[in-house]
Length: 177
Image (cartoon, rainbow, N blue to C red; front, side):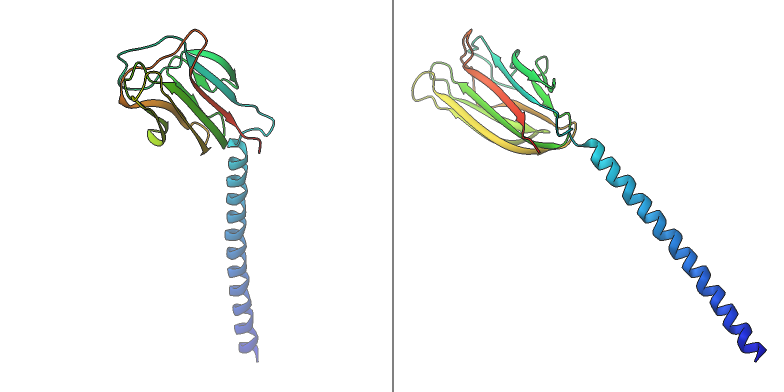
C-alpha cells in the first residue's frame, strides 16, 4: 500500500511539473502575442492623422525620357509625406491610400508613365501621340505599410507638357479608417 501511495505521489508530482511547464509556455506565448499586437497597433496611422498631397510640374520638357518624374511644385502636403526633392511619397503609416497622376504628352511625342510602389509598377498611363497634348491619367488604391514609397516613373516615350497653372500633376491621400 505504501508503494502504491509513493507511485501515485510521484505521478502527481510529474503531472504538476508538466502543468507548470505548460503554464510557462502558454504565458510566454500570450506575452509574445501581446507584444506583437502592440507593435502592430503602433505602426498604423493615427485614425485622426490626415495625409494628402498634390504636386506638379509647371514647365515643359521636350527631352525627359527616364527615371522618376519630379513634381517639384507642391500645392498641398498635409502630413509631409511627399518629398519634392526626390519625387517620392513615403507612407507615414499603415493604411489604404489613393494615388492619381495626370500628364500631357508634348507635341505628339508618346508618353507612358507608371505609378510605382517600392520599385514595382502598379498602373500605367499613356499620353498617345495621335495628336498634340494628349492627356494620360490613371488612379490606383494601394494598401501601404509605414515607410513604403510611391512615385511616378518613365515607362516609354519622351517629354511632357505643363504650364504655370499645372496640368501635369501627382496626387495621393490616405482613406479614413
